Length: 173
Image: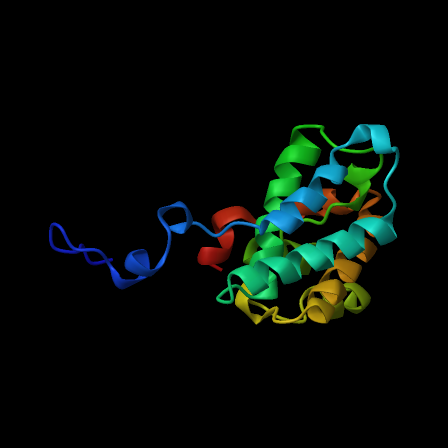
């Protein structure tokens, strides 16, 4: 990126309030709604409720930041939830079972390597090959459905499909 001459602001910064500069955040309505994901006093969460929250939050993020695709919005949400729920062990009962793995080229490569003879899985998980090509929630849902089938085959939680992630190998593949 180019530096602005001393004393000048870039056009975007001049238009936006200081608090919004350089951030892409979930709108406050989605953040407020996400609080119930972590309110253990509310009891167990079910898949239908979580999936509805996830789809609504993705839509809210895209409305807030139109440059995001469904693929990138889901990646941001899923990395956050993996960190807080799976690694940090926070959230309502059963939430860990609901969260989705972050989808990217490394996971697609790992799925292809692990399930070369499972077109029922790969036709869903690898229906696109770039995050930015996940442009609608139906495409994303198809990928997650394939990941659910992979999790069943691996006898693990949905988030644990990420064990197949090929890391930085995909750059040289």
